[in-house]
Amino acid sequence: DIQMTQSPSSVSASVGDRVTITCRASQGISSCLAWYQQKPGRAPKLLIYRASSLQSGVPSRFSGSESGTDFTLTISSLQPEDFATYYCQQCKSFPLTFGGGTKLEIK
Amino acid sequence: EVQLVESGGGLVQPGGSLRLSCEASGFMFSTYWMSWVRQAPGKGLEWVANIKQDGSGTNYVDSVKGRFTISRDNAKKSLFLQMNSLRAEDTAVYHCASTDNWYDIGAFDLWGQGTMVTVSS
Image (cartoon, rainbow over all chains, first blue to last red; front, side, top):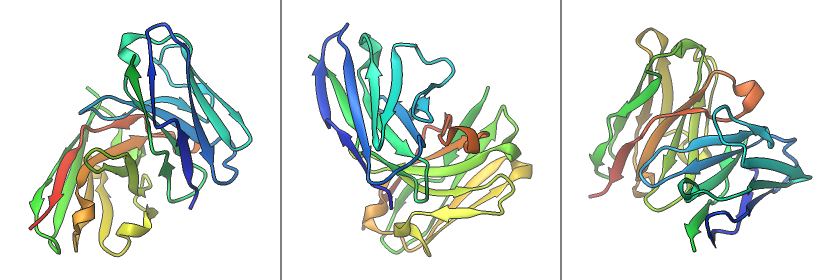
């Protein structure tokens, strides 16, 4: 199985800050990575697919990048509605696997 | 409105069975690749199973193989998860998740709100 190691597990930041979240795959996954945002009691929402493609309707302050087996989600200028938990997910092979999540909290 | 609505969750004893349903509306269900994804209380997301558009192919996470069965009825626009031999560690909110474009995006762009399954004596 492909393991997805996400870091940090939590981060505190302020409105307007730039935040980066990282996901490392245990083997090559050929850009087959998605990022989701989840708020308490809500279903996850797709933000980024194929490592760097922005899902329709998602603000452009969200971006994704990759370097080998390391993937990064960047929020360029945090807005109040961005405080949530973020997950990565690989689609290279079954079983599909998610990272452990990063909780983004208000400082 | 495009939506997925799950039902069938509840409290069940260890070793028991439960059948979850996910009803689709507002889109052409038969063209969508469907999955179940679960989330234990206070924990992260775990993919459980998927089924192709015509039901011809399924995959499962190892922990549920032989106990859970995913199926679909395209005429009724519904997805199902038959869960047998339930264990305490199956306790979670179960979401159905989907996309009509799996091979291009490899991600789920439509989710239901979930149904809670609690396995306890």
